[in-house]
Image 1: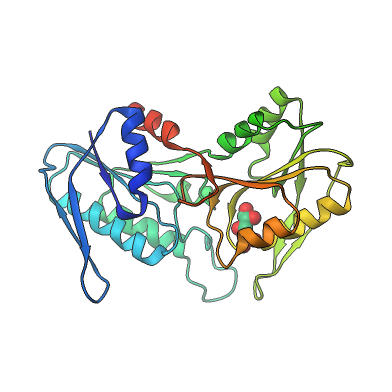
Image 2: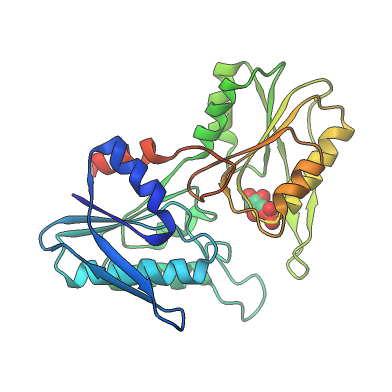
Length: 291
Ligand code: R5P
C-alpha cells in the first residue's frame, strides 16, 4: 500500500505515514501560470493499493479538483485499488433541494467519485452521512467527534458538560461523557434557507457554574457557536471550550468565538489550522490497516 500526499494534506499524510509505517510515494506538483495544477507521479502505481490523502477544505474547488485529478490518474495508471481519504469532504452541505431548482452538490460529487471508479472513500464526520446509503462505492465515515471529546480529559474541568448543536454527535458524546462523569446537553439549531441565519433553540438542563465543552462537527463562520456561547454565558457557565472536528474558521471566525468568551478552540488536523490540536492520523492509520 502506498500513500499519496495531496497538496492540501501533506502534513497529515506525513503523520499517517509515521504512525502506520506506510510509505509516501513521490509526487511532484506545480501550478501553471493560470493557476491550474500540474502533477506527476514519480513512481509506478501499477498493481499497488494507492491511498490518496487530500482534504477538500477551502479552497474547496482547487482541493477537490486536485483530488479528482490524482484519483483519476492513479486509476489510469492501473493501481490495484484506489482509496481516497478526504478527511474533510466538501460540498456535502447541500444534500437535497430545499428550494426548487437547487443543485444537490453532494450527489454530484459522489457520482464523480464513482465514475472514476474509486474503490473506497474514507472521510470524517461528513455533514450529511445519510447520503452514503445511496452510493454504490464503499464509504467509511469515521468519527472525529470522539477524539475531540476524549481530548477534554487533558483539561482540568470541574463539573463538566458537553453541549452539542443538533443531535448528530449526541450518542458518541454520551459514551465519552459516561467515563468523564459529565452530562450531555443538546441545543437545536435551525438555519433560514434564504438568509443562512441560524436560530438556536432552548438549552435543556442547568449549567450554572459548570465547565462546558461545545463539540460541533465543523466551525465555518462561527455564527452558530457565537450564539450558543452567548446563551451559555447568560445561563451562568463557568469555563467554555469550543471543540470541533473541522476547524474551517473563515472570515475571522476564531476571533469572533474567542471574543464571545471561550477559553480556547480545539479542532483536529482534518483541516490544518493553529487550532488543530488533535490528530486524526492514528484513526486513519488504523482504518487503512483494516483495508
Ligand atoms: C450544522 O449542521 C453544523 O453542525 C455546524 O453547526 C454549522 O455548519 C457551523 O456553521 P457556522 O460556523 O457557519 O455557523
